[in-house]
Each structure stands twice: as structure tokens, then as C-alpha cells.
Amino acid sequence: MSIGREPASSRGKAFVLSLLLAFVFLPGARAQTGSPQAALKADLERGQAALAAKDSAAAAAAFRDALKIDPGNAAAHANLGAIAFFQGDCGAAMPELKSALEGAPTLENAKGLIAICEKRMGAKNAAADLEAAFAAMKDEPLRVQVGVELADLYYQSGDLDRTLPVVHELVTLAPDNVDLLFFAQRIYSEMADDTMNKLALLAPDSARMQQLIAEKLINAGDLNGAIEHYRKALAEDPRLPGMHFELAEAILEGGNDAATQAAARAELEAAVKAEGDNPRIECTYGRIAALQGNFADALAHYRRAYAMDPASGEAQLGLGTALAEQDQPQQAVKYLRMAVASDPMNASAHYRLARACRALNLDEEARKQTGLYQEIRAAKDRTAQLYRQMNRRPEPEDELPGEGQP
Image (cartoon, rainbow, N blue to C red; front, side, top):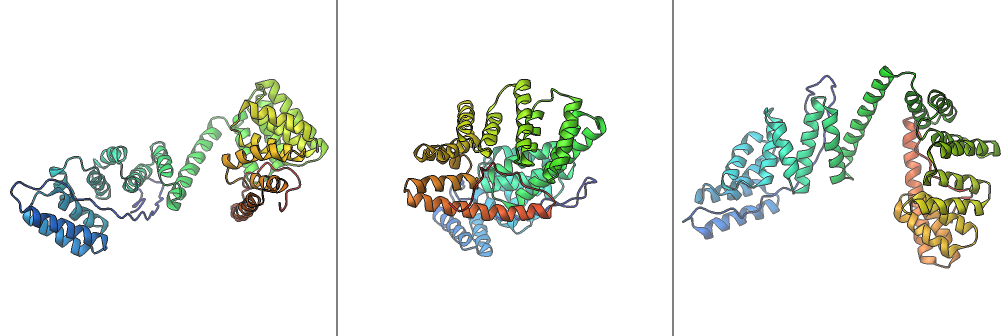
């Protein structure tokens, strides 16, 4: 199927998604009274067997034979409609699917295929029928296909506000579908660009605009430029929520010397004064203490962060690392296992856990965690290369110094 045909709006964009589905309507709709039941059953079973063997021509012939015995058989009509649909012939599919619904009005899959055909054929009621089908579908692969057609319809009309929630649900339904991920990324990017342009028009000198510029510069790897614009944002609005913390993170990311750490701590203190403490602030305090080699202080900060939010992967990792650095591997393993469960793609968590397991002679687990660390690190290196090609930088992991082979 496709997302989409020539755009109806001035956006001029189209996306092609190949979502090939093995779609079969199972027999089971009632036969007409007095029909030769044995022959009808044999024809339907022969059609199903042909579909299983991917012989659509033989399947269609068997279902047509079934209709000679029972002209209103919903299963035969539905299967003939599905065969025509997946051969790209909506004109032939629609009458069969509608006949199926006459005999079995609750066939949700038939309604979904009809809605897709309506969209492809330019019917005015396509949007309403796609919306109804997407909400009602239980067959997950077909629901994804209906959702893609609905998202494409919204997108081609330039309605990003209605496209976004559908795309979000599609990515939830099929999180590993590369085409859906591509489409979602395009939608998110367009919405981000639209909102940024609107903000630039409405408030080009505002604190929020300066914050947005700073975040864009961080993505581009320009920490000095980001810090400058964070400071401009604070000059415009000293009480802007989260700004002191973001500035502290940017400063700390720019270097590990004593002056940098002191500047970052000053911003964290300002953040606490303005908004109160929180787990992220405590974790950053802990990170600074660890960079200074003061693991007792780091442990205290990470304990406070964990007490505030036991589900924080950052607090779990920091707590486990600080305990390990204080020669408490038995306690460290508990929190490092939590960190790995919270974020299975965190290479540092696997690395630290491998080291702690090795210290406890848990050799099998240590080998497993080392292997995972190496796989994730290699994958992230490949991702980093892609980001460099796009002149962007992925978000860094919070790592303590000394990481190498466990």
C-alpha cells in the first residue's frame, strides 16, 4: 500500500510504505437454508487451502464455486474481495466486500478494506469510514494498514494535528516498522518546524525563543553557542522553568575542569532556589562529585535522587556505580541490574554491571553483560556516524570516568 498518492495540499510530499499482509477471511458465515452443505464446505475448505498455498487463482475459483451453491455466502464473498484487494483491484474488491457485509454485517476486516478502497478511489466518505475502521479493528496488521491510509489522508490534506495522534498509535502498534518510523520522523520534524516558525514570528526575542535556539545548538554540537543563548533566555526571564538546570547540563558537558564544575554547581543551586530540588538535579550533583573522585558525596546525592524517584534509571546507575567505586559490589549489583532493566540500551549500565559481577565472581553474568555492552556500543557508534552525517550529535550518556573494557 502507499502513503500517499500525489499530494492534495501544497506540501508536495509522498511516502511509500510496503505493508504486505497475509490477510484471510476465515469461513464461518451462515449458508442459505437448503444448500448442499457438504459441497459448500468442501469448496470453502478448498479455497482456504489454496490461499494457504498462495495460489490466489485456485482460491478464487473455489470461492466462486461456493457462491454457485450459496450466492449469499459471506465467507466466499469476503475472501474474493480480499483476493482482489491484495491484487490491487479495488473496483473488483468493493462489490464482493459489500456483499459479504450484507450477509455478515459485523465483519470488521471487510469494513476496513472497503474504507481503504474508498480512500484510494477518492470517495468523499473515505475519511469517516477509515476513522471508524481504525477505531474498531482488532486484526492488528490490518489495523496498521487502515491507520497508514488514514494518516496519509490527513497528511495529504495538510492536517498535521490530526495526522500526529494516528502516527503515534501506529508506531506503538508496529514499533519496528522502518517505514512507519520514517513517516513518524517526518511528521514530528514538520510539526517542530511549524511551531518553531510560529514562535519566531510571534516572539523572536523571547526567552523561549532563546531556549529553543540553545537546544538546536546543542543538537549541532555547539555548546558554547548554546550556553550563550541559555544565558540570554535567563536574562529575558530569570524565572523560566528548567532553564538553570539546562544551562548547568550544557556547562558540564563542555568540560570537566574545576571552573566548569563550579559554574555548573552554581546553576544547580540557582535551580534549587528557583524551583526546588528534584531527582535530575541530585543526579547532576552526583555526577559532579564523581568527576571529582568524591564518591561518598556522589553516593549521598544519588541516594537522594533514588529516594525521590526509585524508577529513575539515572539514579539507579549512579547509585550502583558509586557503591562499586566504594568497594561495595554486592549492593552495587542490585541497583545496576535495575538500571539495565530501566534502559536496556544504556551501554554504561551494562559495562558497570559486568565489572561488579566480575568482582563477585559471577562470571557467566559478567560475560553476558560484557557482550551486551560491546553490541550496544558498536550500535551507538554506527548511530553516531549517522548523526555526524546529519551534522547532529546524539544525546550523550551520563558516564563516569574510566570506562573501558570490563
